[in-house]
Image 1 (cartoon, rainbow, N blue to C red):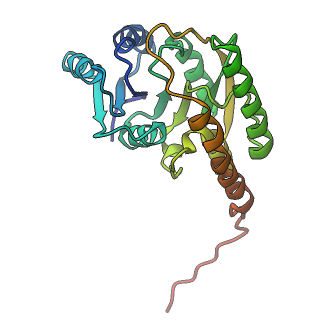
Image 2: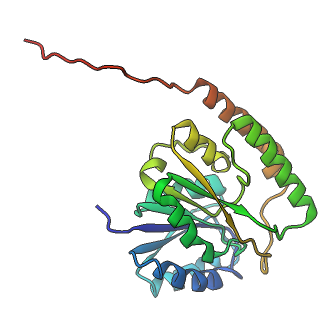
Image 3: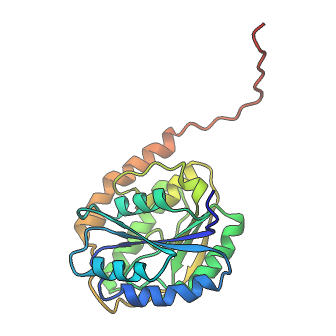
Length: 243
């Protein structure tokens, strides 16, 4: 069995201006936890030089691993590949755009001592007013439909227990509904306020087409799963060996 305690999973698509600084910020924070950890970067078809920087960084860091896609398959695939390759007891996810603050990781890890999943709630969002309105509205609809209680579902800074992740089946778009999927399976959730920072390099990969309209079908699928989930308790299980 692996002796890695934490796997930090970062999906990356064209983040050439952010990855060096992010790794430099992340390493002292993770080292301060005092447990073995790994950095797992999933390169989702980058074409801007991110691949070369990742290879350079990994060559100098035995704790760093890279999964490289042949093409751009999207964030659900990147998370699924990362979850499948993670070795840590806890899997920590964050975006590669440096808007998530690595300094928040220790308090999420502390909260995970008695929770299966810990989700960040971004305070003082550093996005434009339109993105904040869309995100707030989407969270309200999702929270009502999925009954998961999540205030800020789109915050990528989260901590998961790996043994719980192994019981979740990933589909396209399902990375946006992982708290609901965890709750459907009966796992425990917590929420913690975290910092949010402005993007200083690169540009967002999201728009109304890939984060708005496409999520409606995904939301309906999760609602269906919640309503049709098999929930039973066994009162007794008597077995008698055949003579």
